[in-house]
Length: 137
Image (cartoon, rainbow, N blue to C red; front, top):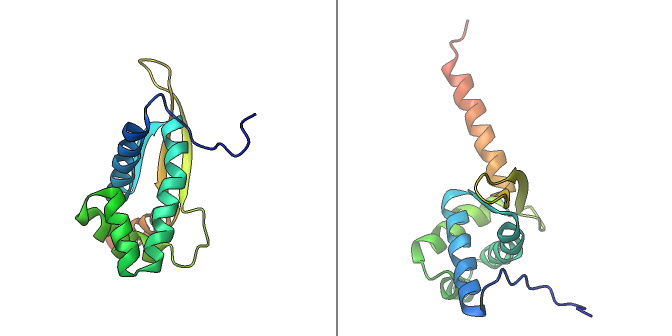
């Protein structure tokens, strides 16, 4: 029985899986949205949400823990300065996974993982930009 065994192995050993999750988390923080396989997206979601919860604490110890996992100081600065303040009112569920269908080459199920709060902020910015672009009559 596999009670409480939640790790998705993704056909990788532990060090490769940890490096993969760190790289995917860095890309998600940097770009706000990434397209990957469904299995990787499902494995990334708890990692990314734990990083946001860590960043919401906003103290030196949590910053050092984030740097220890991500290994990129600029990405950690962006996590603490942009991603965590956008999610300050949310108690969890910071990521959204949207299924895209199979990939053309190998039929692997694809998905987009994105931040919930930054997607809402981006749509608000485009609406205000479109309103500013239309001339007032």
